[in-house]
Length: 267
Length: 316
Image (tube, rainbow over the protein chains, first blue to last red):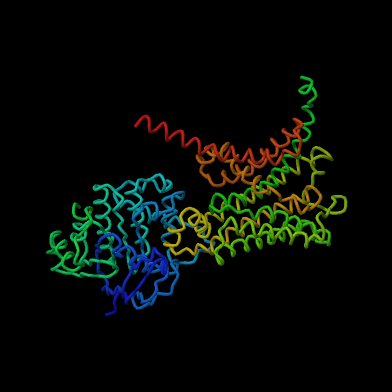
């Protein structure tokens, strides 16, 4: 069986040779099985989001390899990798086009990875399908298909972005702190939707989070990053037995430093 | 008082049909400016050069014996080439958009001189069956004047229909997404560089077409005719939005109404322009007047929002 994702020894240094030089990724190795849902935690600057951006191809990596279901995508441009990836971002503004209708946003996502032709941008059959999918969110958005996305709340936009990421089956779903900008109640709702979409579509997914409880409660595998490396990797029963205290302890043990992020301890 | 009495309302009424026709032809350029400025979020100053390129190409082809109608699609293609250069400077060579467009604009000045051989080339309606001409508006029977306006309106509506269709296609969606949120567009697999170049080509194609039409209308192409054209295009876009924006947004075919309002913005611009000339304001001041109009109308939405934010803060 081949891996859904293979990350082989990737490195990335930002602002190399300047006073702002920052080693962002320092030899990350990771293999995901199909259907794995891995949560990623770590302090600020640990390389969590950077890993996701490296996979998405926001910028080229310095060395290493990224392989999705046997296809080496290391050299592909960001828009070409989109064919393999569904992405949801921290900022609810990032995942959608605010001046376009809900249904237009969904139509764009439904064509992810395809060339944009002179066919009409949305068919009535698609519209019906989008309406059904929106109804499953339980947010009443199915009655607002021609509303501009800019009029929606952050939570609604994240829910739509999640739906968009799965409209066309991605080989890997990347969730980059996608609930961090939401209030706790909305964040819980969006997480619930994430779980549902991942389960229903049997997606392989990676979720970066600042919230240790969420990291423990969701997914079948957890990795902790520190200074551009994966320092802890746990899955299965061992993961489900984890507590926040275990994670804090583990972090101090492996990294040799205190967990300096109040946000994670308090969460 | 004697100044006011000396103004002849009839003179204004006689001049306005010509202004309206001119506004309709520049409205084609304004559509191009709308595509870059509003849909693509790209301040494209190529326009000042590409409108003269369209004019030069159309006039020189007509003088060489090409039918005036056939010269127009070629003017469109010439404009597209100009847009292609700006797009490639920006996306392939990483030159900031506004600077890339200025470089194209400046180089087009030389290219336009080469196309024309000198700075001004006439094309008289007496010698050629021109598609549009000021003569059709000022001279001749009322019926033929009406026919001219009906024909022009029909042409503009056809153009609006084509653009409405295009921006409803997958490619049109891609342009709008790229302009609104390039990160989202790339995450959805849209090649934002390619799309940018495409939109710049379409926009400048329309500008070139407008230049060809306007050159025929005024009976000459001039290397300086594009100076400040972008300001007029922006004025048209903004006047259209301020006056008809709310009306257009409520309609079912909102986007088509928005495009029409851009053309109306150009028409109103030239009617006001004529009005100010009629008040005997020296024509030397006209560029200043245009710039002030654009600055004021650009500032209105910003200041409105700022005032609302202030109000909001008091109540909260």
